[in-house]
Image (cartoon, rainbow, N blue to C red; front, side, top):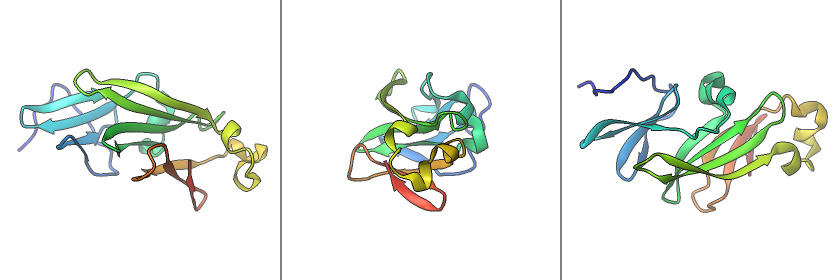
Amino acid sequence: SMLPCPRPIQLLESGGPIVYNGIPHWCTRQDGLVAYDHNNPCRLIKLPEDRDMETDGFDGGIYRLCNVCHGHLKYFEVAEIRVNPSFNVWVLKDYDTGEWCLEQRTRLIDTLRSDERFFSSSNLNRFASMPAAFDPFELDMVYLSCRGHILSY
């Protein structure tokens, strides 16, 4: 049957549901997650307000990752991909209110300057790194796909 929602939603084509607290959630094209719970059949949870809106919608959302990591719902983005790429990480602090808390914001040039194969100043503006997964064992590690390589951050 069709789920009743207060407004039309478009799910991202890639990725399946994120199961958090036993409830399936799907990323939408607009600005958040939609959760299906028998008690609240169509709950909308906004993504962090201070995320990079250009990156959020770029190439169908491939520069963002939302998933469960160590029991917490996390949101990771590669922001400002055309100018000064940065990595930003939020954690959902309050599920009921949808409050996100920025855990980390790191400029790429400050973090990965030492590996000239990927991050020379001439290549920085063409940096194309897509978040792939949160590490299941290390709380602060994310895997990225970049130019045919897997990087850990």
